[in-house]
Length: 102
Image (cartoon, rainbow, N blue to C red):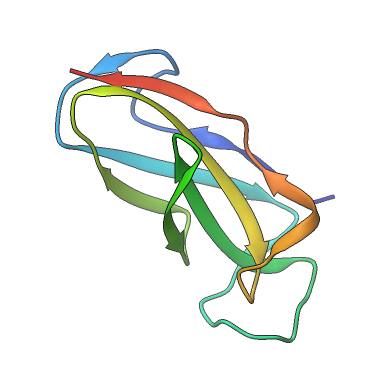
């Protein structure tokens, strides 16, 4: 079964931090990230889309990324999508992780 295990940071969910970037590290079970976009779809290969406050901010070909942030409270989530960037059915998404930047 495919699952995005979660979104983790160098901070705990609900924590307040300062700075201009947040380092996002994802973990993925039962699938692998591929670097090329293709229409030859396999259920265990794809890309990661990152969402901040439920808005797509990044289409990533890896499991780590630095996101720019400014003061405020954010909800971060990730979705594992097919190699053509379309969502799987059912969708493979993490739960929201909430954090605040001073």
